[in-house]
Image 1 (cartoon, rainbow, N blue to C red):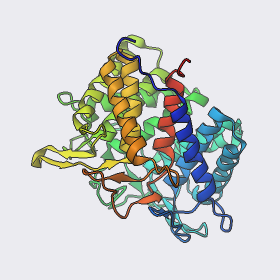
Image 2: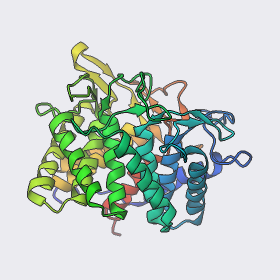
Image 3: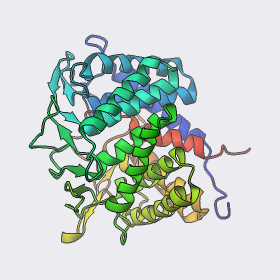
Image 4: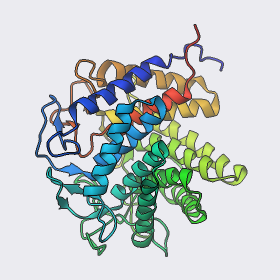
Amino acid sequence: MEGTKTILPVSPYREALESILDYWIARTIDPVKGGFYGRIRADDTVEMDAPRGSVLNARILWTFSAAYRLNRREDCLDTATRCYRYIVEHFIDHNRGGVYWSIDADGRPLDTKKQIYALAFTVYGLTEYFAATGLPEAREAAIRLYRDIEEHSYDKVRGGYLEAFSADWTALADLRLSAKDANEKKTMNTHLHVLEAYTNLYRIWKDPGLQQQVYRLIANFLQHMIDPITHHLVLFLDEDWNPRSDTISYGHDIEASWLLLEAAEIVSDHEETVVRPVRKISLDMVKAAAEGLAPDGALYYEYEPAGDHWRKEKHWWVQAEAMVGFVNAWQLSGDPAFYYQFEGVWSFIDRFIIDHARGEWIWGLQEDNTPMAGEDKVGIWKCPYHNGRALIELIRRLPAKKE
Protein backbone atom coordinates (compact mmCIF):
# COMPACT_ATOMS: atom_id res chain seq x y z
CA MET A 1 0.00 0.00 0.00
CA GLU A 2 1.09 3.57 -0.67
CA GLY A 3 3.22 5.00 2.07
CA THR A 4 3.95 1.69 3.79
CA LYS A 5 7.18 0.59 2.15
CA THR A 6 9.04 0.00 5.41
CA ILE A 7 6.97 -2.97 6.59
CA LEU A 8 8.91 -4.71 9.33
CA PRO A 9 9.78 -8.39 8.84
CA VAL A 10 7.80 -10.98 10.74
CA SER A 11 10.90 -12.29 12.53
CA PRO A 12 11.00 -9.70 15.37
CA TYR A 13 7.44 -10.58 16.37
CA ARG A 14 8.11 -14.29 16.17
CA GLU A 15 11.24 -13.90 18.25
CA ALA A 16 9.34 -11.82 20.80
CA LEU A 17 6.59 -14.44 20.97
CA GLU A 18 9.03 -17.32 21.42
CA SER A 19 10.71 -15.40 24.24
CA ILE A 20 7.40 -15.02 26.07
CA LEU A 21 6.57 -18.71 25.64
CA ASP A 22 10.04 -19.75 26.81
CA TYR A 23 9.72 -17.59 29.93
CA TRP A 24 6.40 -19.10 30.96
CA ILE A 25 7.57 -22.66 30.36
CA ALA A 26 10.83 -22.14 32.25
CA ARG A 27 9.66 -19.92 35.12
CA THR A 28 5.98 -20.46 35.91
CA ILE A 29 5.37 -24.22 36.07
CA ASP A 30 5.10 -25.53 39.64
CA PRO A 31 6.74 -29.00 39.69
CA VAL A 32 5.69 -29.67 43.29
CA LYS A 33 2.05 -28.61 43.67
CA GLY A 34 1.11 -28.79 40.02
CA GLY A 35 -0.21 -26.15 37.70
CA PHE A 36 1.44 -22.74 37.60
CA TYR A 37 2.71 -20.33 40.23
CA GLY A 38 0.21 -17.65 41.17
CA ARG A 39 2.66 -14.79 41.35
CA ILE A 40 6.15 -13.81 40.20
CA ARG A 41 7.32 -10.37 41.27
CA ALA A 42 8.92 -7.79 39.01
CA ASP A 43 12.40 -9.01 40.03
CA ASP A 44 11.45 -12.58 38.96
CA THR A 45 11.12 -13.79 42.56
CA VAL A 46 8.50 -16.55 42.79
CA GLU A 47 5.83 -16.30 45.49
CA MET A 48 5.18 -20.02 45.75
CA ASP A 49 2.13 -19.84 48.03
CA ALA A 50 0.33 -17.04 46.17
CA PRO A 51 -3.33 -17.62 45.27
CA ARG A 52 -3.96 -18.80 41.72
CA GLY A 53 -6.51 -17.05 39.55
CA SER A 54 -8.92 -18.58 37.07
CA VAL A 55 -8.32 -15.71 34.64
CA LEU A 56 -4.56 -16.24 34.73
CA ASN A 57 -4.94 -19.95 34.05
CA ALA A 58 -7.55 -19.52 31.33
CA ARG A 59 -5.26 -17.05 29.60
CA ILE A 60 -2.31 -19.43 29.85
CA LEU A 61 -4.49 -22.12 28.28
CA TRP A 62 -5.54 -19.85 25.42
CA THR A 63 -2.01 -18.58 24.77
CA PHE A 64 -0.27 -21.94 24.64
CA SER A 65 -3.06 -23.52 22.61
CA ALA A 66 -2.94 -20.68 20.09
CA ALA A 67 0.85 -20.76 20.03
CA TYR A 68 0.87 -24.49 19.33
CA ARG A 69 -1.50 -23.97 16.42
CA LEU A 70 0.99 -21.46 15.04
CA ASN A 71 4.39 -22.99 15.79
CA ARG A 72 3.63 -26.70 16.45
CA ARG A 73 6.08 -26.73 19.38
CA GLU A 74 5.44 -29.82 21.47
CA ASP A 75 6.37 -28.01 24.68
CA CYS A 76 3.61 -25.48 23.96
CA LEU A 77 1.11 -28.33 23.58
CA ASP A 78 2.40 -29.94 26.78
CA THR A 79 1.98 -26.65 28.64
CA ALA A 80 -1.54 -26.18 27.28
CA THR A 81 -2.48 -29.72 28.30
CA ARG A 82 -1.06 -29.20 31.77
CA CYS A 83 -3.16 -26.06 32.11
CA TYR A 84 -6.30 -27.70 30.71
CA ARG A 85 -6.10 -30.51 33.26
CA TYR A 86 -5.41 -28.10 36.10
CA ILE A 87 -8.45 -25.98 35.20
CA VAL A 88 -10.72 -29.01 34.95
CA GLU A 89 -9.47 -30.46 38.23
CA HIS A 90 -9.36 -27.30 40.34
CA PHE A 91 -11.18 -24.29 38.88
CA ILE A 92 -14.40 -25.70 37.40
CA ASP A 93 -17.19 -26.13 39.92
CA HIS A 94 -18.49 -29.52 38.85
CA ASN A 95 -21.40 -29.42 41.29
CA ARG A 96 -22.91 -25.98 40.73
CA GLY A 97 -21.41 -24.93 37.41
CA GLY A 98 -19.13 -22.06 36.55
CA VAL A 99 -15.56 -21.53 37.74
CA TYR A 100 -14.07 -20.28 40.99
CA TRP A 101 -12.38 -16.89 40.91
CA SER A 102 -9.32 -18.22 42.73
CA ILE A 103 -7.83 -21.24 44.48
CA ASP A 104 -4.96 -21.53 46.93
CA ALA A 105 -1.57 -22.91 46.02
CA ASP A 106 -2.68 -26.41 47.04
CA GLY A 107 -5.59 -26.32 44.60
CA ARG A 108 -8.42 -25.71 47.08
CA PRO A 109 -11.18 -23.19 46.31
CA LEU A 110 -10.40 -19.78 47.81
CA ASP A 111 -12.68 -17.09 46.36
CA THR A 112 -15.69 -19.05 45.13
CA LYS A 113 -17.66 -16.21 43.51
CA LYS A 114 -18.83 -16.75 39.93
CA GLN A 115 -17.44 -13.75 38.06
CA ILE A 116 -18.79 -13.89 34.50
CA TYR A 117 -15.55 -12.36 33.24
CA ALA A 118 -13.71 -15.45 34.52
CA LEU A 119 -16.24 -17.84 32.99
CA ALA A 120 -15.82 -16.08 29.67
CA PHE A 121 -12.05 -16.43 29.71
CA THR A 122 -12.34 -20.09 30.60
CA VAL A 123 -14.60 -20.60 27.58
CA TYR A 124 -12.01 -18.73 25.49
CA GLY A 125 -9.19 -21.00 26.68
CA LEU A 126 -11.16 -24.23 26.35
CA THR A 127 -12.28 -23.47 22.81
CA GLU A 128 -8.74 -22.69 21.71
CA TYR A 129 -7.51 -25.90 23.31
CA PHE A 130 -10.16 -27.82 21.38
CA ALA A 131 -9.01 -26.09 18.18
CA ALA A 132 -5.45 -27.19 18.94
CA THR A 133 -6.21 -30.78 19.95
CA GLY A 134 -9.69 -31.79 18.83
CA LEU A 135 -10.38 -33.11 22.35
CA PRO A 136 -14.20 -33.43 22.60
CA GLU A 137 -14.20 -32.98 26.38
CA ALA A 138 -12.72 -29.50 26.01
CA ARG A 139 -15.51 -28.37 23.69
CA GLU A 140 -18.13 -29.96 25.94
CA ALA A 141 -16.73 -28.11 28.96
CA ALA A 142 -16.82 -24.82 27.03
CA ILE A 143 -20.43 -25.39 26.00
CA ARG A 144 -21.43 -26.15 29.60
CA LEU A 145 -19.89 -22.88 30.77
CA TYR A 146 -21.62 -21.02 27.94
CA ARG A 147 -24.93 -22.44 29.14
CA ASP A 148 -24.09 -21.45 32.73
CA ILE A 149 -23.55 -17.87 31.56
CA GLU A 150 -26.79 -17.88 29.60
CA GLU A 151 -28.81 -19.38 32.43
CA HIS A 152 -27.56 -17.18 35.25
CA SER A 153 -26.12 -14.00 33.78
CA TYR A 154 -28.06 -13.11 30.65
CA ASP A 155 -30.58 -10.31 31.26
CA LYS A 156 -33.64 -11.62 29.46
CA VAL A 157 -35.53 -8.35 29.91
CA ARG A 158 -32.96 -5.67 29.05
CA GLY A 159 -30.28 -7.69 27.27
CA GLY A 160 -26.64 -7.98 28.18
CA TYR A 161 -24.92 -9.81 31.01
CA LEU A 162 -24.86 -9.24 34.75
CA GLU A 163 -21.47 -9.16 36.39
CA ALA A 164 -21.13 -11.67 39.20
CA PHE A 165 -22.81 -14.13 41.55
CA SER A 166 -22.05 -16.10 44.67
CA ALA A 167 -20.92 -19.71 44.52
CA ASP A 168 -24.54 -20.91 44.35
CA TRP A 169 -25.51 -18.22 41.78
CA THR A 170 -27.35 -15.97 44.24
CA ALA A 171 -26.94 -12.18 44.27
CA LEU A 172 -23.78 -10.46 45.48
CA ALA A 173 -23.41 -7.00 47.00
CA ASP A 174 -19.92 -6.50 45.55
CA LEU A 175 -19.80 -7.23 41.83
CA ARG A 176 -16.41 -5.71 41.06
CA LEU A 177 -13.58 -7.37 39.21
CA SER A 178 -11.06 -5.28 41.14
CA ALA A 179 -10.95 -2.51 43.71
CA LYS A 180 -10.59 0.20 41.06
CA ASP A 181 -13.81 -0.77 39.28
CA ALA A 182 -17.25 0.74 39.81
CA ASN A 183 -19.71 -1.57 41.54
CA GLU A 184 -22.23 -1.73 38.69
CA LYS A 185 -24.31 -4.59 37.33
CA LYS A 186 -23.05 -4.29 33.77
CA THR A 187 -19.59 -3.44 32.52
CA MET A 188 -18.10 -3.02 29.09
CA ASN A 189 -15.12 -5.16 30.06
CA THR A 190 -17.16 -8.26 30.87
CA HIS A 191 -19.28 -7.82 27.74
CA LEU A 192 -16.15 -7.51 25.59
CA HIS A 193 -14.73 -10.77 26.87
CA VAL A 194 -18.03 -12.62 26.69
CA LEU A 195 -18.11 -11.50 23.05
CA GLU A 196 -14.54 -12.69 22.54
CA ALA A 197 -15.28 -16.07 24.12
CA TYR A 198 -18.55 -16.60 22.25
CA THR A 199 -16.86 -15.72 18.95
CA ASN A 200 -14.20 -18.36 19.57
CA LEU A 201 -16.85 -20.86 20.62
CA TYR A 202 -18.77 -20.21 17.40
CA ARG A 203 -15.66 -21.08 15.41
CA ILE A 204 -15.91 -24.66 16.69
CA TRP A 205 -19.65 -24.96 17.37
CA LYS A 206 -22.02 -23.44 14.81
CA ASP A 207 -25.00 -23.22 17.13
CA PRO A 208 -27.79 -20.83 15.99
CA GLY A 209 -28.57 -19.76 19.54
CA LEU A 210 -24.92 -18.87 20.14
CA GLN A 211 -24.83 -16.95 16.87
CA GLN A 212 -27.89 -14.96 17.96
CA GLN A 213 -26.22 -14.06 21.25
CA VAL A 214 -23.14 -12.75 19.42
CA TYR A 215 -25.40 -10.59 17.25
CA ARG A 216 -27.03 -9.27 20.42
CA LEU A 217 -23.67 -8.54 22.02
CA ILE A 218 -22.55 -6.56 18.97
CA ALA A 219 -25.82 -4.62 19.13
CA ASN A 220 -25.27 -3.96 22.85
CA PHE A 221 -21.96 -2.32 22.03
CA LEU A 222 -23.30 -0.25 19.18
CA GLN A 223 -26.37 0.89 21.12
CA HIS A 224 -25.10 1.26 24.68
CA MET A 225 -21.34 0.94 25.12
CA ILE A 226 -19.84 3.12 22.37
CA ASP A 227 -20.41 6.85 22.73
CA PRO A 228 -21.91 7.98 19.39
CA ILE A 229 -20.16 11.36 19.59
CA THR A 230 -16.69 10.60 20.95
CA HIS A 231 -16.49 6.91 19.86
CA HIS A 232 -14.95 6.05 23.23
CA LEU A 233 -16.32 3.15 25.27
CA VAL A 234 -18.67 3.54 28.21
CA LEU A 235 -16.99 1.41 30.87
CA PHE A 236 -19.70 1.01 33.54
CA LEU A 237 -23.48 0.89 33.23
CA ASP A 238 -26.44 0.12 35.43
CA GLU A 239 -28.95 -2.64 34.82
CA ASP A 240 -30.93 -0.40 32.43
CA TRP A 241 -27.84 0.56 30.40
CA ASN A 242 -27.53 4.03 31.87
CA PRO A 243 -23.86 5.19 31.81
CA ARG A 244 -22.17 5.27 35.23
CA SER A 245 -18.71 6.39 34.18
CA ASP A 246 -17.07 8.87 31.83
CA THR A 247 -13.52 7.52 32.22
CA ILE A 248 -11.78 6.88 28.90
CA SER A 249 -9.71 3.70 28.68
CA TYR A 250 -7.54 3.92 25.58
CA GLY A 251 -6.47 0.28 25.76
CA HIS A 252 -10.04 -0.98 25.89
CA ASP A 253 -11.07 1.37 23.08
CA ILE A 254 -8.49 -0.05 20.72
CA GLU A 255 -8.88 -3.66 21.87
CA ALA A 256 -12.65 -3.52 21.31
CA SER A 257 -12.15 -1.95 17.88
CA TRP A 258 -10.71 -5.14 16.42
CA LEU A 259 -12.51 -7.73 18.58
CA LEU A 260 -15.90 -6.33 17.58
CA LEU A 261 -15.02 -6.57 13.91
CA GLU A 262 -13.61 -10.06 14.33
CA ALA A 263 -16.89 -11.17 15.91
CA ALA A 264 -18.99 -9.60 13.15
CA GLU A 265 -16.92 -11.19 10.40
CA ILE A 266 -16.92 -14.65 11.96
CA VAL A 267 -20.59 -15.04 12.88
CA SER A 268 -22.30 -12.94 10.22
CA ASP A 269 -23.01 -13.43 6.54
CA HIS A 270 -24.80 -10.06 6.40
CA GLU A 271 -22.15 -7.78 4.94
CA GLU A 272 -24.28 -4.66 4.55
CA THR A 273 -26.31 -4.79 7.75
CA VAL A 274 -23.74 -6.15 10.24
CA VAL A 275 -20.15 -6.20 9.02
CA ARG A 276 -19.97 -2.88 7.18
CA PRO A 277 -21.34 -0.77 10.08
CA VAL A 278 -18.91 -2.45 12.46
CA ARG A 279 -16.01 -1.73 10.12
CA LYS A 280 -16.89 1.95 10.20
CA ILE A 281 -17.21 2.12 13.98
CA SER A 282 -13.98 0.13 14.33
CA LEU A 283 -12.06 2.85 12.48
CA ASP A 284 -13.80 5.56 14.50
CA MET A 285 -12.78 3.83 17.74
CA VAL A 286 -9.14 3.57 16.67
CA LYS A 287 -9.05 7.27 15.83
CA ALA A 288 -10.56 7.99 19.25
CA ALA A 289 -8.00 5.76 20.98
CA ALA A 290 -5.17 7.52 19.16
CA GLU A 291 -6.02 10.64 21.17
CA GLY A 292 -4.11 8.89 23.96
CA LEU A 293 -0.83 8.49 22.08
CA ALA A 294 2.25 9.79 23.86
CA PRO A 295 5.04 11.66 22.04
CA ASP A 296 7.28 8.56 22.33
CA GLY A 297 4.76 6.35 20.52
CA ALA A 298 3.21 4.61 23.54
CA LEU A 299 -0.50 4.68 24.34
CA TYR A 300 -1.47 6.20 27.68
CA TYR A 301 -3.73 4.36 30.12
CA GLU A 302 -6.74 6.53 30.98
CA TYR A 303 -8.29 9.99 30.93
CA GLU A 304 -11.10 11.37 33.09
CA PRO A 305 -12.81 14.24 31.24
CA ALA A 306 -14.80 15.50 34.24
CA GLY A 307 -11.66 16.49 36.12
CA ASP A 308 -9.36 16.78 33.10
CA HIS A 309 -7.21 14.13 34.78
CA TRP A 310 -4.78 11.94 32.86
CA ARG A 311 -3.25 8.65 33.95
CA LYS A 312 -0.23 8.68 31.68
CA GLU A 313 1.07 5.28 32.67
CA LYS A 314 2.10 2.99 29.83
CA HIS A 315 0.81 -0.49 30.65
CA TRP A 316 2.04 -3.55 28.78
CA TRP A 317 -1.42 -4.75 27.77
CA VAL A 318 -2.45 -1.38 26.37
CA GLN A 319 0.61 -1.34 24.11
CA ALA A 320 -0.07 -4.91 22.97
CA GLU A 321 -3.68 -4.17 22.01
CA ALA A 322 -2.64 -0.92 20.34
CA MET A 323 -0.41 -2.81 17.91
CA VAL A 324 -3.26 -5.03 16.72
CA GLY A 325 -5.76 -2.18 16.62
CA PHE A 326 -3.55 0.07 14.51
CA VAL A 327 -2.58 -2.75 12.12
CA ASN A 328 -6.23 -3.74 11.77
CA ALA A 329 -7.19 -0.13 11.01
CA TRP A 330 -4.41 0.12 8.42
CA GLN A 331 -5.60 -3.09 6.76
CA LEU A 332 -9.18 -1.82 6.70
CA SER A 333 -8.49 1.66 5.41
CA GLY A 334 -5.15 1.60 3.62
CA ASP A 335 -4.25 4.77 5.53
CA PRO A 336 -0.49 4.70 6.23
CA ALA A 337 -0.96 6.87 9.32
CA PHE A 338 -2.30 3.85 11.19
CA TYR A 339 0.72 1.80 10.19
CA TYR A 340 3.09 4.50 11.39
CA GLN A 341 1.24 4.58 14.71
CA PHE A 342 1.72 0.81 14.97
CA GLU A 343 5.44 1.21 14.26
CA GLY A 344 5.68 3.78 17.04
CA VAL A 345 4.05 1.46 19.56
CA TRP A 346 6.19 -1.51 18.54
CA SER A 347 9.34 0.58 18.82
CA PHE A 348 8.32 1.68 22.32
CA ILE A 349 7.58 -1.91 23.36
CA ASP A 350 10.89 -3.15 22.02
CA ARG A 351 12.85 -0.41 23.80
CA PHE A 352 11.06 -0.23 27.12
CA ILE A 353 8.48 -2.97 27.77
CA ILE A 354 10.18 -6.20 26.70
CA ASP A 355 12.55 -7.51 29.36
CA HIS A 356 15.30 -8.54 26.97
CA ALA A 357 17.57 -9.68 29.80
CA ARG A 358 15.20 -11.95 31.74
CA GLY A 359 12.26 -12.57 29.43
CA GLU A 360 8.56 -11.60 29.28
CA TRP A 361 7.36 -7.99 29.43
CA ILE A 362 7.33 -5.70 32.43
CA TRP A 363 3.99 -4.42 33.72
CA GLY A 364 4.51 -0.87 32.56
CA LEU A 365 6.10 2.54 32.93
CA GLN A 366 5.25 5.91 34.38
CA GLU A 367 4.94 8.94 32.11
CA ASP A 368 8.70 9.57 32.39
CA ASN A 369 9.40 5.92 31.47
CA THR A 370 10.51 4.83 34.91
CA PRO A 371 9.13 1.38 35.85
CA MET A 372 5.85 1.19 37.74
CA ALA A 373 6.75 0.01 41.23
CA GLY A 374 5.31 -3.07 42.92
CA GLU A 375 3.71 -4.62 39.84
CA ASP A 376 3.90 -8.31 38.92
CA LYS A 377 5.68 -10.14 36.13
CA VAL A 378 3.14 -12.95 36.60
CA GLY A 379 -0.06 -12.70 38.59
CA ILE A 380 -3.84 -12.63 38.76
CA TRP A 381 -3.83 -9.99 36.00
CA LYS A 382 -0.35 -10.34 34.48
CA CYS A 383 -0.68 -13.08 31.91
CA PRO A 384 0.81 -14.04 28.53
CA TYR A 385 -2.46 -13.37 26.69
CA HIS A 386 -2.42 -9.73 25.58
CA ASN A 387 1.17 -9.67 24.43
CA GLY A 388 1.18 -13.27 23.18
CA ARG A 389 -2.03 -12.76 21.21
CA ALA A 390 -0.85 -9.46 19.76
CA LEU A 391 2.33 -11.05 18.44
CA ILE A 392 0.38 -14.01 16.99
CA GLU A 393 -1.90 -11.51 15.23
CA LEU A 394 1.08 -9.62 13.80
CA ILE A 395 2.69 -12.81 12.53
CA ARG A 396 -0.55 -13.75 10.80
CA ARG A 397 -1.39 -10.31 9.46
CA LEU A 398 1.92 -8.84 8.27
CA PRO A 399 3.85 -10.20 5.32
CA ALA A 400 7.38 -11.41 5.76
CA LYS A 401 10.06 -9.11 4.43
CA LYS A 402 11.17 -10.05 0.93
CA GLU A 403 14.90 -10.23 0.40
